[in-house]
Structure formats: C-alpha cells, structure tokens
Length: 320
Image (cartoon, rainbow, N blue to C red; front, top):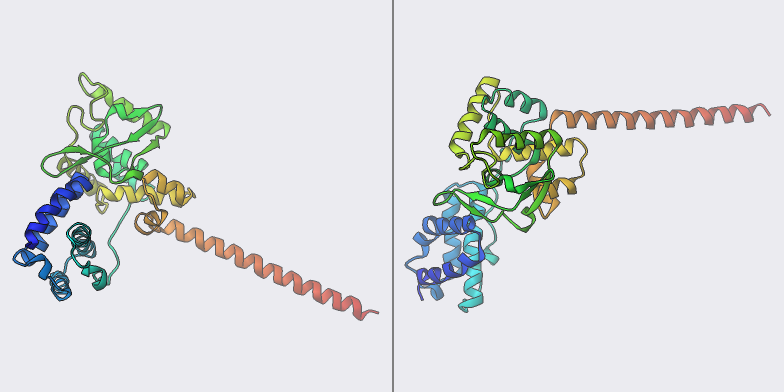
C-alpha cells in the first residue's frame, strides 16, 4: 500500500472524527506539507529516518511554532490511525518528538477597559459598535459571534451552540469543543443594546443574525470598521480574537476567579486560560507593588514592636 492510498483511507475516518474546520485544516496541511514528501513512498517501507527527514524539512522552512505544531499532530494522528487499523509497526513521531520551539516572546495583545472605551467611541455604525462591544464583554470567539442569532438569547443569557466557518463559504458548524457549548450571562446594558438591534432590521425574527440581520456581517467589513476606528483613536489595532484576550484579562484583573473565567470562555482546562488568554497590564503590576509594600511595612512594624517590647522587658528586669 502506498502512502497516498493510506492517506485516502484515512480521510474517510478523519472526516467522521473532526469538525468541518478541523478536517479542512488537516487536508490542507497534508496536501501542502506532507503528501509532497511521502506520496511516492510505500507505507510499510517507511523508516524512522524517513520521518525524521520530514521533520527536518519542516523545521528548515521556518514556520511559526503554532504551524509546526499543527503539522506535527496532523501526521501524528495519521500514523496513529495506521498503527490501529492498518497494522503499521509504530508511530515514529512518538520517538522523534515534537518540533523544538523557537525562542522569542509570543506576540499577543489586548485592550484594557480605558483603551476599549477610546476605540469604541470611533465606531460610527451601531451594528458594528455592538459587535465589538459584545466580543469585549463576553469573550466569545469570532466565529461564535458571527453565528449568533436572536433565538440564542433568552432571559439575559446567550447560548453558544454553533460557530460560522470560513472554509468553502460560510456555514454553521459545532463549536470548537464540548466545553465550548455554554451559556453566557449578559450584563444589563449589553442585553438591552443587543435586543435593540432588532429594531434596525426590517422584518426581523428570531432566525435573524444578531450582527447582520438576514445574513451575518462579513469579516472583511468588520475588520475595515475596526481599522478605521483604531486610526481615529490613535490606537494600535488588535485582532478580533484578541478581543477575547481582552475580556479574559479584564475579568482576572477585577478579581474574578480563574476557573470562572475559563468556564465563561469555554475552556475545559484553566491552564489554557492562564497561559494563553490572560495578560498582565500596568494596573495589575501596581496592585502587586502595593500589596508587597503593605506586607513589608507590616512585617517591619511587627519586628520593630517586638524589639521595643523586648527592650522594655530588659529595662523592667534591670530595675530589680
């Protein structure tokens, strides 16, 4: 059996195992980064050296850490299938290991509340204004926000039960994971503002998209409004996904427990929230600074009082 024949069999299996967007990512990586290297090889003639050479070729292309990780797990899952269903001897990637991470600080950004207020002031269309406001104050993913319909809002709660994909047209898909299926409570002002959008759409019913009406907003137009507002506000632009980062950081900086933040974001593991979505701002550093000053001041005063009491006792006993 050739590598390519095994891949075609794997596609049937993978299509059932993955969400549409994940499946499309898998096939894209296979076609561009895996098949060109392995397609002319016989599956059972592959050696550990062959797989190692593939990892070296990918490393030399100088992709991002995240893209290397996606390439690794795409081929890793294929070999797991081959071991399980095609009697392939072993998954060589388990022995070779993951790609070595490249040094350098991961680039990410967010808006604090002051920056967001400055930004939103320059969004001059109500629908787009509420789109950005919704993302900042709920932490939903862009695809979840685009997919939101009025029927998903009830009693002040938003049901996150679907996402809009961008592959092969815009279609509904399941959220990223089981934990992504969640209910989010809207604050009073956001609830009122979101429901008021119904008045802007002619013939609006519960199947209408909250942000767009009959059709969801186009990501390109959303980004155009975003960049225009950033220029007017003299702010650095952030990505749509970084509004999600902004929400997580806003909550943590206002003493919301990390497990509650993780649940609101739809994370199954709080470490994802901490390592990826929570950032330190200057206000947080000032709180740490003030706390340490208080602790050290109290410790110094305690030690001083103990010493003074000790001296008083010595003087007291010296009198007898």
